[in-house]
Image: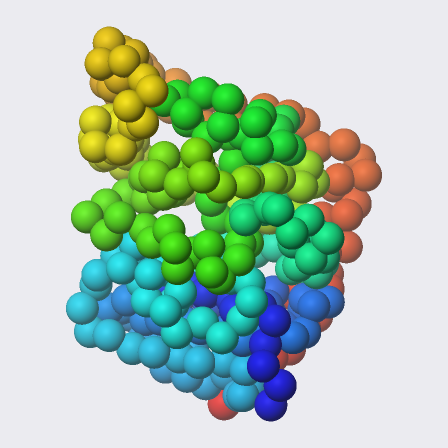
Length: 296
């Protein structure tokens, strides 16, 4: 078997309901020179058996009975990856069949770029498209223009060079906001880019909670304290950290007032064009008609 150009690295935990759809999405990709590393991060719902049932020599399934978290798993995938590029992916999402092809071609033709992501198409229950999360940035300078506030690039769709991931491991003490910690520790010596098309289909609507929002913002505040460059003053760092706690308060108030869904919808406030909707529907037809060879 030829050496893969791309490693698809996915860690999953209790996502039995989405694993078959995920396999359909991966096998529907127009780019074929890949290996797929699937790590069962301590699942208890039978997901390992579903993953093991996929019959393709490009698929490697690894099991661990201990739930160690995304940072640990991503770093391990990086260590064992054989591809020149690594694609991150959340186990409960989908993407356009041309996503990997587009990103690989972008990295081939932009040798100075380390990471490239895409815009998101946000999905609600039953995979109904809610809208487009338009990042509005394409260059490194735009993406990293306000690092204490955030990086205008999505983590789940990103693909990068394997060497870059090995040079910039995820801080493993972070169980949440792992992307912000990674970007903050690496942006000053790296180059990021974004393809401004909704090639990643993000099932976000059921994933938000006050607890998760609280933990995320606390982790971001911690990352600012630990990793913000010395070029920022103590006062700038303090203001950025306090802003995170103000966000928690605002989200808590919105939850109490029943406005949580409105806040969530702001991520996908850009309405889909008719063209985007047609592209999505055609992509989903291809994915659903793809039948991976399994023992199920």
